[in-house]
Image (cartoon, rainbow, N blue to C red; front, side):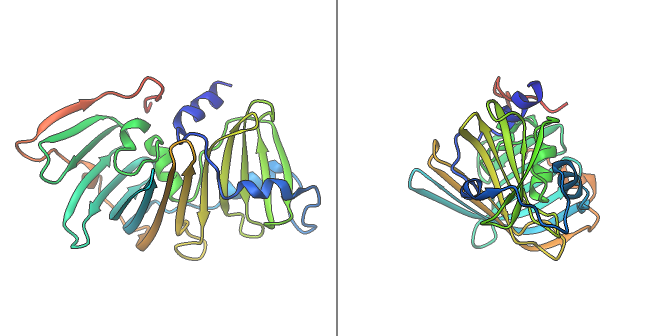
Length: 271
Protein backbone atom coordinates (compact mmCIF):
# COMPACT_ATOMS: atom_id res chain seq x y z
CA UNK A 1 0.00 0.00 0.00
CA UNK A 2 2.97 2.34 0.35
CA UNK A 3 3.35 2.36 -3.43
CA UNK A 4 -0.38 3.00 -3.81
CA UNK A 5 -0.32 5.97 -1.44
CA UNK A 6 2.71 7.36 -3.24
CA UNK A 7 0.97 7.20 -6.61
CA UNK A 8 -2.15 8.81 -5.17
CA UNK A 9 -0.03 11.68 -3.87
CA UNK A 10 1.62 12.13 -7.24
CA UNK A 11 -1.57 11.92 -9.27
CA UNK A 12 -3.26 14.76 -7.38
CA UNK A 13 -5.76 15.69 -10.12
CA UNK A 14 -8.72 15.09 -7.71
CA UNK A 15 -11.88 13.07 -8.47
CA UNK A 16 -11.85 12.90 -12.25
CA UNK A 17 -14.59 11.86 -14.63
CA UNK A 18 -12.47 10.26 -17.33
CA UNK A 19 -13.71 9.75 -20.86
CA UNK A 20 -12.53 6.13 -20.61
CA UNK A 21 -14.71 5.31 -17.60
CA UNK A 22 -17.70 4.33 -19.76
CA UNK A 23 -15.66 1.39 -21.03
CA UNK A 24 -15.85 -0.31 -17.65
CA UNK A 25 -19.54 -1.14 -18.09
CA UNK A 26 -18.80 -2.93 -21.35
CA UNK A 27 -16.11 -5.22 -19.96
CA UNK A 28 -16.32 -8.91 -20.81
CA UNK A 29 -14.27 -12.04 -20.32
CA UNK A 30 -13.93 -13.11 -23.97
CA UNK A 31 -10.44 -12.20 -25.12
CA UNK A 32 -9.23 -12.06 -28.74
CA UNK A 33 -8.31 -15.59 -29.76
CA UNK A 34 -5.07 -14.54 -31.42
CA UNK A 35 -3.77 -12.39 -28.54
CA UNK A 36 -2.35 -12.65 -25.01
CA UNK A 37 -4.42 -14.37 -22.35
CA UNK A 38 -2.93 -12.91 -19.16
CA UNK A 39 -2.81 -9.40 -17.73
CA UNK A 40 0.94 -9.66 -17.13
CA UNK A 41 1.60 -10.46 -20.79
CA UNK A 42 -0.52 -7.56 -22.04
CA UNK A 43 1.14 -5.17 -19.60
CA UNK A 44 4.63 -6.45 -20.41
CA UNK A 45 4.06 -6.01 -24.14
CA UNK A 46 2.76 -2.48 -23.61
CA UNK A 47 5.76 -1.59 -21.44
CA UNK A 48 8.10 -3.13 -24.03
CA UNK A 49 7.10 -0.58 -26.66
CA UNK A 50 10.23 1.54 -27.14
CA UNK A 51 10.17 5.19 -26.08
CA UNK A 52 12.21 7.86 -27.88
CA UNK A 53 15.09 9.30 -25.88
CA UNK A 54 14.07 12.87 -26.70
CA UNK A 55 11.10 14.86 -27.92
CA UNK A 56 11.08 18.51 -28.94
CA UNK A 57 8.92 20.92 -30.87
CA UNK A 58 5.62 22.74 -30.52
CA UNK A 59 2.56 21.75 -28.54
CA UNK A 60 -0.77 23.38 -27.69
CA UNK A 61 -2.34 23.44 -24.24
CA UNK A 62 -6.02 24.26 -23.67
CA UNK A 63 -7.17 24.52 -20.06
CA UNK A 64 -10.71 25.25 -18.85
CA UNK A 65 -11.33 25.76 -15.14
CA UNK A 66 -14.45 27.19 -13.49
CA UNK A 67 -15.56 28.73 -16.78
CA UNK A 68 -12.20 30.38 -17.41
CA UNK A 69 -10.24 29.39 -20.51
CA UNK A 70 -6.46 29.51 -20.78
CA UNK A 71 -4.74 28.66 -24.03
CA UNK A 72 -1.10 28.82 -25.03
CA UNK A 73 1.40 27.43 -27.47
CA UNK A 74 4.28 25.57 -25.86
CA UNK A 75 7.85 25.15 -26.98
CA UNK A 76 8.53 21.72 -25.53
CA UNK A 77 11.72 19.76 -24.96
CA UNK A 78 12.19 16.57 -22.96
CA UNK A 79 14.97 14.10 -22.47
CA UNK A 80 14.70 10.79 -20.70
CA UNK A 81 14.73 9.97 -17.91
CA UNK A 82 13.55 13.17 -16.21
CA UNK A 83 14.57 16.41 -17.99
CA UNK A 84 11.76 18.67 -19.17
CA UNK A 85 11.37 22.25 -20.36
CA UNK A 86 8.21 24.12 -21.37
CA UNK A 87 8.09 27.66 -22.71
CA UNK A 88 4.66 29.28 -23.02
CA UNK A 89 4.44 31.52 -26.08
CA UNK A 90 2.06 34.29 -27.14
CA UNK A 91 0.39 34.13 -30.59
CA UNK A 92 3.22 36.40 -31.75
CA UNK A 93 5.67 33.73 -30.45
CA UNK A 94 6.90 36.10 -27.74
CA UNK A 95 7.95 34.33 -24.55
CA UNK A 96 5.36 34.41 -21.75
CA UNK A 97 6.72 31.96 -19.17
CA UNK A 98 9.30 29.21 -18.66
CA UNK A 99 9.39 26.06 -16.57
CA UNK A 100 12.44 23.79 -16.67
CA UNK A 101 13.78 20.87 -14.67
CA UNK A 102 16.81 18.59 -14.84
CA UNK A 103 14.92 16.00 -12.80
CA UNK A 104 16.18 17.23 -9.44
CA UNK A 105 15.58 20.99 -9.32
CA UNK A 106 13.13 23.22 -11.14
CA UNK A 107 13.00 26.86 -12.21
CA UNK A 108 10.01 28.90 -13.34
CA UNK A 109 9.51 32.56 -14.23
CA UNK A 110 7.26 34.83 -16.27
CA UNK A 111 8.39 37.42 -18.78
CA UNK A 112 8.58 40.80 -17.10
CA UNK A 113 7.94 39.32 -13.66
CA UNK A 114 9.95 40.43 -10.67
CA UNK A 115 10.32 36.93 -9.18
CA UNK A 116 12.01 33.72 -10.31
CA UNK A 117 10.84 30.55 -8.57
CA UNK A 118 13.19 27.66 -7.86
CA UNK A 119 13.01 24.52 -5.74
CA UNK A 120 12.86 20.74 -5.72
CA UNK A 121 11.28 19.13 -8.77
CA UNK A 122 8.26 17.79 -6.91
CA UNK A 123 4.77 17.44 -8.44
CA UNK A 124 3.41 20.61 -6.80
CA UNK A 125 6.17 22.77 -8.27
CA UNK A 126 6.06 21.18 -11.74
CA UNK A 127 2.33 21.90 -12.02
CA UNK A 128 2.90 25.69 -12.12
CA UNK A 129 2.76 26.04 -15.93
CA UNK A 130 0.58 23.09 -16.98
CA UNK A 131 -1.61 21.88 -14.07
CA UNK A 132 -0.56 18.22 -14.12
CA UNK A 133 1.04 17.29 -10.80
CA UNK A 134 3.60 14.56 -11.51
CA UNK A 135 7.26 14.12 -10.60
CA UNK A 136 9.62 14.79 -13.53
CA UNK A 137 10.32 11.19 -14.56
CA UNK A 138 6.57 10.46 -14.70
CA UNK A 139 5.92 13.75 -16.53
CA UNK A 140 8.41 12.71 -19.23
CA UNK A 141 7.04 9.19 -19.57
CA UNK A 142 3.42 10.40 -19.56
CA UNK A 143 4.15 12.75 -22.47
CA UNK A 144 5.72 9.82 -24.32
CA UNK A 145 2.64 7.66 -23.78
CA UNK A 146 3.54 5.59 -20.71
CA UNK A 147 1.20 6.42 -17.80
CA UNK A 148 2.08 6.03 -14.11
CA UNK A 149 1.22 2.53 -12.85
CA UNK A 150 0.56 1.13 -9.41
CA UNK A 151 3.25 -1.23 -8.17
CA UNK A 152 0.94 -4.10 -7.26
CA UNK A 153 1.17 -7.77 -8.24
CA UNK A 154 -2.62 -8.21 -8.24
CA UNK A 155 -3.55 -8.09 -11.95
CA UNK A 156 -6.81 -9.02 -13.68
CA UNK A 157 -7.43 -8.98 -17.44
CA UNK A 158 -10.73 -8.10 -19.15
CA UNK A 159 -11.79 -7.40 -22.70
CA UNK A 160 -13.73 -4.18 -23.28
CA UNK A 161 -16.31 -5.15 -25.87
CA UNK A 162 -17.52 -1.64 -26.67
CA UNK A 163 -14.08 -0.07 -27.10
CA UNK A 164 -12.20 -3.08 -28.39
CA UNK A 165 -9.47 -2.66 -25.77
CA UNK A 166 -7.74 -4.75 -23.15
CA UNK A 167 -8.54 -3.54 -19.64
CA UNK A 168 -6.10 -4.49 -16.91
CA UNK A 169 -7.14 -4.03 -13.29
CA UNK A 170 -4.23 -3.45 -10.91
CA UNK A 171 -4.73 -3.68 -7.14
CA UNK A 172 -7.66 -4.74 -4.94
CA UNK A 173 -11.08 -3.54 -6.05
CA UNK A 174 -11.97 -2.53 -2.47
CA UNK A 175 -8.91 -0.31 -2.06
CA UNK A 176 -6.63 1.74 -4.27
CA UNK A 177 -6.77 0.24 -7.73
CA UNK A 178 -6.23 1.20 -11.34
CA UNK A 179 -7.70 0.36 -14.74
CA UNK A 180 -5.23 0.42 -17.61
CA UNK A 181 -6.49 0.38 -21.22
CA UNK A 182 -4.29 -1.11 -23.94
CA UNK A 183 -4.96 -1.37 -27.68
CA UNK A 184 -4.73 -4.84 -29.24
CA UNK A 185 -2.14 -5.56 -31.95
CA UNK A 186 -0.17 -2.33 -31.30
CA UNK A 187 -0.23 -2.69 -27.48
CA UNK A 188 -0.28 1.08 -27.15
CA UNK A 189 -1.47 2.53 -23.84
CA UNK A 190 -4.80 4.29 -24.48
CA UNK A 191 -5.33 5.57 -20.96
CA UNK A 192 -5.63 4.82 -17.29
CA UNK A 193 -8.07 5.50 -14.45
CA UNK A 194 -7.09 5.46 -10.77
CA UNK A 195 -9.68 4.66 -8.09
CA UNK A 196 -9.98 4.61 -4.32
CA UNK A 197 -12.68 1.99 -3.85
CA UNK A 198 -15.53 2.98 -6.19
CA UNK A 199 -14.46 6.64 -6.32
CA UNK A 200 -12.44 7.81 -9.30
CA UNK A 201 -9.30 9.67 -8.26
CA UNK A 202 -7.35 10.39 -11.45
CA UNK A 203 -7.10 9.63 -15.14
CA UNK A 204 -4.98 10.14 -18.22
CA UNK A 205 -6.28 9.54 -21.74
CA UNK A 206 -4.31 9.37 -24.98
CA UNK A 207 -5.48 9.83 -28.57
CA UNK A 208 -3.61 9.30 -31.82
CA UNK A 209 0.11 9.10 -32.47
CA UNK A 210 2.72 11.69 -33.47
CA UNK A 211 3.95 9.11 -35.96
CA UNK A 212 3.32 5.41 -36.48
CA UNK A 213 4.49 3.62 -33.35
CA UNK A 214 5.41 6.91 -31.68
CA UNK A 215 4.14 8.83 -28.65
CA UNK A 216 0.53 10.06 -28.44
CA UNK A 217 -0.66 13.10 -30.33
CA UNK A 218 -2.94 14.20 -27.50
CA UNK A 219 -2.95 13.87 -23.71
CA UNK A 220 -6.10 14.82 -21.80
CA UNK A 221 -7.36 14.84 -18.25
CA UNK A 222 -10.49 16.13 -16.52
CA UNK A 223 -11.30 16.96 -12.92
CA UNK A 224 -14.87 17.41 -11.70
CA UNK A 225 -13.73 18.53 -8.25
CA UNK A 226 -11.63 21.30 -9.77
CA UNK A 227 -14.03 21.90 -12.69
CA UNK A 228 -10.94 21.41 -14.83
CA UNK A 229 -10.46 20.13 -18.38
CA UNK A 230 -6.93 20.19 -19.83
CA UNK A 231 -5.79 19.01 -23.27
CA UNK A 232 -2.19 19.00 -24.47
CA UNK A 233 -1.76 18.39 -28.21
CA UNK A 234 1.60 17.77 -29.87
CA UNK A 235 2.40 19.78 -33.02
CA UNK A 236 5.52 19.89 -35.22
CA UNK A 237 7.37 17.35 -33.10
CA UNK A 238 10.83 15.86 -33.63
CA UNK A 239 11.78 12.59 -31.96
CA UNK A 240 15.20 11.24 -31.06
CA UNK A 241 17.19 14.36 -31.97
CA UNK A 242 20.07 14.94 -29.51
CA UNK A 243 19.43 17.53 -26.77
CA UNK A 244 22.28 18.69 -24.55
CA UNK A 245 21.87 18.83 -20.78
CA UNK A 246 22.58 22.58 -20.93
CA UNK A 247 19.12 23.10 -22.48
CA UNK A 248 17.55 22.31 -19.10
CA UNK A 249 20.10 24.32 -17.05
CA UNK A 250 18.07 27.53 -17.19
CA UNK A 251 19.06 30.44 -14.91
CA UNK A 252 16.92 33.19 -13.42
CA UNK A 253 16.76 36.47 -15.37
CA UNK A 254 19.23 39.04 -14.20
CA UNK A 255 17.82 41.31 -11.50
CA UNK A 256 14.90 39.05 -10.57
CA UNK A 257 14.15 38.07 -6.97
CA UNK A 258 14.91 34.36 -6.47
CA UNK A 259 12.18 32.66 -4.42
CA UNK A 260 12.67 29.10 -3.11
CA UNK A 261 9.38 27.21 -3.24
CA UNK A 262 8.78 24.34 -0.81
CA UNK A 263 7.04 21.15 -1.81
CA UNK A 264 3.62 20.60 -0.34
CA UNK A 265 3.70 18.11 2.55
CA UNK A 266 1.73 15.55 0.50
CA UNK A 267 4.19 15.68 -2.39
CA UNK A 268 6.99 13.13 -2.29
CA UNK A 269 10.30 14.67 -3.30
CA UNK A 270 12.19 13.28 -6.25
CA UNK A 271 14.80 10.80 -4.99
